[in-house]
Length: 431
Image (cartoon, rainbow, N blue to C red; front, side, top):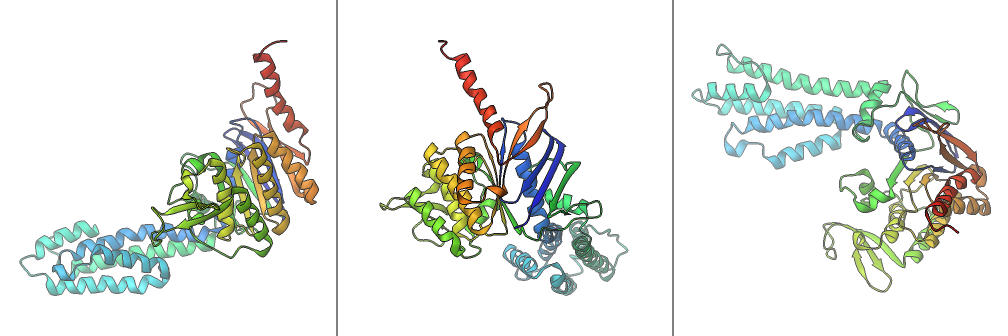
């Protein structure tokens, strides 16, 4: 199954955290103790290392887009019928992305040469000086009156070819080097603005360090991480977000072992979930839809928030993203849930781990969720791979938290919950 140890120290609210992941891991602590920070950075590392080459290609693609746009703008100097339109530009970019930067280089060179041949053929001597001045601006190439058309186009062609080649070679070298600085750049595509790179962060897979000063390795047994914070995600999902993409796009068939879990969720919410795109005749707008067994069909965003919590889990199952090589990270899964449904949700998480070995990290403030995870894990025989942590301050004046490993026990977590009961007594009616 694989055992992971994630360390994060002296970062934001966290003084020290050493978190073990081998089954189900539960983080508990008061608000502002850094639970979401741990969740986010674990997600960043798993996704960043697994999708490293994808993000390197995307960065290179974004650098090449202006080169393609300059070709389109330059083509507008020619006869209208010869100009590269916006739709053609999009086609070029789509083909570039599909083929990859290296495979597309020959096509790019051909497009540049074709454009410049057309410029030579179609620009009259009368229009030439003005056209060259505009081309010098478009391609950012120096132009003087002494430049002939051939010499100027030669400089512009060399610059376009050279820029493309430099971007391509840089991407190829980054993929080979796999150095930490390049990973930092990649993770900046995922991380929240202002997070900054922690000075003290590490991740081990079965005692093998995946990060060091020389570079990094991707996990062998974790091919994807899925992260969402229930509270924020229910309120708003961005269409362009990675989590929304997982909800929209099928990946694999649901493993046979998990079909019973899928049926269990459908029974709990008394219905099914589906994604309707722009090609569906039934939908009002693209998005997730909840179809209740009595025939009611509404956009999921109009359904009860408790149903939405289960719906996300169900749709991840429907699309085949919950596999044995997945790390599922959820902030506050119990948010919006009735106490009975909290226990049902805990049961689902335990079954997901038991059936296929999916690793799960949750943060929770709720005593029912914490207690249910412990009790059900013990009943289902997976308690040996369950870990509970509580965030503590060593001294009251300390503003940062240390995460204490409680193993499979939850007594100290409940001590923090009991503070609320004592305050109710303090603030409420005195006997």
